[in-house]
Every structure is written in structure tokens, then in C-alpha cells.
Image (cartoon, helix red, strand yellow):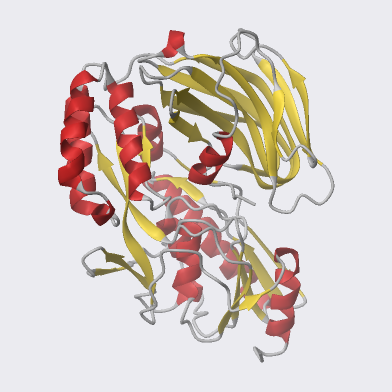
Length: 450
């Protein structure tokens, strides 16, 4: 099954017919055997739509949701935003929204809230996603999406035009030229594109582009050609949010059972310095508080970590990780940049020799995979679970003219022993995800004996 990942879900959603519908008709998407869609309403009305998605039975890594389609004509050359308020009940995997525009040859714009999944139990959580609709678009499709177990309820689900932004008066050719130069010079997979062969076609597309939306469609097509599954284009609104805000995918949790401490490490979305520091201190202080109770070792649970910003996670776990460097970025030219960990700004115990079990799974992605790599090669450490999502590459942010940002995969992860990653990361011991924590506790309680 495909995972809660933008590229994979985009490919899956592309299987839906692109014929425009004149009425707001909702239908279930994905695994209709294990997911039930209820509710409805007009997402273009002031009240919006209200829908629920409920899993049933053993869903494994499946997903399901709802989809409606409208004519793209009124939105061409503009931004369109899908927003809603989400309640989550026992969600494992992720609850959120998705939005897509289709043209004659398939998907021309796509976005979802995968970087900010709603997990566990939550009430009235606001989520929104936005795309620029190019002039070639014929249909806009959208809806709620649930991965894994649980129930999602979305209220006030509304599809509407977004106001003009900072890129409104920027020539499309200028946006495309800047993005092409950045990708050509810095992308990890830049050599997969014959730049001399595509240059004339890019120039032609940029010249006929009618606005930023068409420019972003060209850039998205290049991102697909890179094939790294990790690079992403953020529109100005999302780029500002990422720069100004910071929040975990869920609250970090730490508990002790039979002398073993389990740290549930969520993802962290955003680059706000204050929010990142607060997250790191929460994690570090929780570890320090329970450490006197720990006699059997530590479990670092990354199974529900979708990634985001790796640095506050590394900072919060620094007491367990030991001396730097705990990992590196290796770029396309083979140059290594060591990972530097900022201290959490509080007294922390020395746990560098403690036994640690690391849990991974299919939802461990991006920066979540970076944390798994940071523990690779650490003494007294063993990993359990399932292979990760396969996004073990480093993204660097580049600002484009007009305020959009290109999150570009520029390097592979390298652990402290020199092992290079870039794809899925397999644990030391393959066990079912639901059995990983009990197997890890058993290993720790046997004093690390394999």
C-alpha cells in the first residue's frame, strides 16, 4: 500500500476521472472496503461541507477519504484554497485534506496537509491547503483523507479563491528561470535532467505563462523529473507559515513501564526559533524528569513521525545521542556536512551509554528518518519495526521571486559510521509495527542481548 506521502498519494489520486462535475457530489476514495464516507454539503457555500471518514476492520497501511470535483475554469490563473476544521478520534497514520487540479494530460497542481497530519484524539483543528491553478487546468478535485485507523470529522470544509499574493506582479519567466538555476546547480538528482535539451522547452513555456500559477506548473513538472520524491514547492502563504510558525504533529509523550522509558517523538513543522526551542526543551525536560526511574533502557518511537524540521528533534534527544557528529549530509559532489546539534538550553543527564531501542515504520519519513539515522552506529542501540518511508534525504529551502519557496532535496543522509542512505531504512530487526515496542522492551530487559 502507498503511504501518507504527497508524491505517492498524488499518483493514487490521479486515478480518479477528471471529468468536471456541475454539482457537489461526494464519493468515497481509496480503500472502499475498509473506509466509510458519510455526510456531504457544498464546499463552495458559506457553511461549507461536513463529512466523516471512518476506518473499519484491519486497515493496515490503507487509506480512504472523500472526493468532489468542480470545473476549474473560474479558478484558472488564480489560487484556490481548501480549508476545514478537523476532529480526530484515535487516528493512527494521519488525518487531513488534499487538493488537486487536473489538465488534459493529468495532474497539473497538487498539495495536501501531510506535513501537518492530525493524529490521535484532537478537536477543532484548523487545516488548510492551497494550490495555484494553471491556465491548462480543467478540473479541481478535493476532499478529506484518512490514513490508517481512526475516524476523521471535517466541518466547514470550504473551497474558495485565495487573495492575490506577493507574486501577483512577478513575471512568470523570472520565477521559472530562478527555479531552474537552483535545481540545476543544487538538486541531488540534477543529473537526471538533460538541461540543455529541456532549456528551449522551458523558455517557451515561461514565455506563454499567464501568471505565477503557470510558472509553478512548470516547476512542479521539473520536480517530478528529478524523481527524488522529496522536493516540494511551497506557495508564498505556505512558505511564510513555515518560516514564522512551528508546531509538532502531536505532543511528545514519555512514559515508564517496568523500568523502560518510551519516548514518542512526533514530527515538527516550521522554523520558528522560539517554537523549536520550546519543543526541544519539552522533550529534553521530559527525559530528564523520568531518567531516575529508568533501569532497563529507552525506547525512541519514531513510527508516527512524518518529519519536518529535524533540528529541534535532535536537540531534544541530544542527551541520548552522544557526541557529535551523529550524522552528515552528503551532496551530489560527495561533500559531507556534519549535523550540528544546538543544546536544549537546560541541564540534562548524561545518557550517552544508556541502552536505546529505536522503532521505525512506514510512516517514519524525512526528518523522522534523520533521527533514526542519528542513532545508527551508536553503541548499545538496536532498531525494530518496519522499513521507513524512503525519504532519507535532506531538503534545503530556496526562496523564489515573489515569495514561494523551493524545498529541494540536495543531499543524502549519512550515519556516524559512514553508511549512506537516500531510500528506505530497514531496522536491525524486522517485526510487525504493532509488535515493535514489546520486542524492543524484551531486548532491553535482557540487558541488550540479541
